[in-house]
Length: 516
Image (cartoon, rainbow, N blue to C red; front, side, top):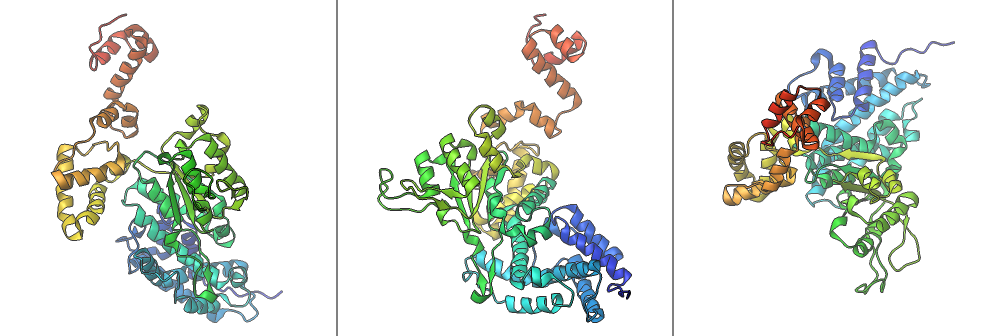
């Protein structure tokens, strides 16, 4: 039996194995940077290494540039050694394909950026692009070698669409989510998996065309940006490239269809979602398509405040999730929904189910993919410096970039002096927006006293944030138990403490006389 000569030298093989891990890792988690460190070894630069914590820049980060250059050298070296009969080991072929994939994406990322920014700024031309011919030539050059299967399984147009989608996801995730805290990094990582799943290779080969079958449920406190998360997911969906039309099937920026369910009556909700026929109800003078009909296969319908919707609407939405069909109001014909459903709520849906207010079967259809948004307090606890970043983000569109910097310094100083660094922000980012607006107008902000008081009494939240000392925790717990038992002796028995200790603890926070 003939012995197949190794395609990759030991150093190149180790590098290629690291690139495989780079490609497979979630780009918003520390594992991605560690894989890049492994790929470069001593050449890894620690300065600006955490590129995944910042929005995409026109120029590549230093480590990414180094990896891209070495990928190109490895690719060219492998091509010169490639046997004419295509007899290379399966592992060498797989590693070579991974390196080519990384190089292609990084090489064309700047071109993708131009297309994305033009579309976001309203300067797009319906998805037409001029990058594909050169991209296809590169794909055929590097993937068209004997023995490789890439082009047979994934045509150049599909690889182009996937690479464009990945770059688009980076832009959208950073465009809608501001901040460098660990909770925000975890949120970005969760959105990435919602878009691409945890296995990008499997996604690229099969799941890309089936992601509409997976509904996404976004949960979290009010004011934490659940709609922004929904937009990031919706604007980052896979859109096929059509070589004959020299463009993408759809402009990604036109695929989001939001509806706040709490703001509408059941009839209006049905009309907005499913459409209606003339005469279906008073005022229905003409036929009107709803979001379910207008939404293209690559788009998404966003159902905000899903926990508020009545059971009768839940049944109809359940049918959409189960059979992908719906009926317009006043029609007996079924229409097919081809897009994706994204829902959001600040309600505890399992609790709603137990109370008979939310259908269990509907819940399980919604929750196959879940994303939880962190509170503003969680973000600032991890990264206090994010406050200035967020204030600047709110102020810039209000007063312009030239004035926003100076105002941000003033606003952060005012917040620190009058609200304190540990202010709970019970209204989350929405409250911060109103704080900024109030400071711009009146040079002061007065939090709703009821919200502030509620947060101070919510000692469970204080425990979660680590803001109680052990002494304060015992005191609050003793008071809570005493509030139920009304005697020091029973409270002491339940807590396993001496009666005198309980009395001293309760006396710190209440003047209630001893009724033991």
